[in-house]
Image (tube, rainbow, N blue to C red; front, side, top):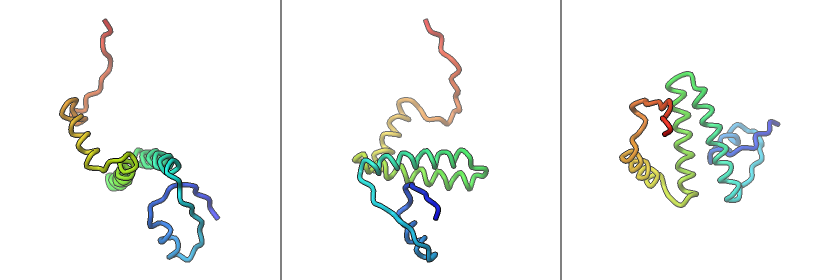
Length: 108
């Protein structure tokens, strides 16, 4: 039996059960849950970085967005609050659309 020891989407146990396979799960305490959400972000970001097609990249971005929804919730907000903060930062500091790459800054 393969061992995974990772956070999975809520319906994965149902998907596995529908295949007739047995499995074990546990429910995480809040601090463990937050840690595993963060770990899952690294996993999904790595999968995004390794994507070799736009379709695969979009799938991985959707996974990251789902994680952002969950992380916003555990931090006492929702994704609309995250979006509000993102917009404020974009207004003050800009986004990343101009592709500007800072090489260096003269130190006086």
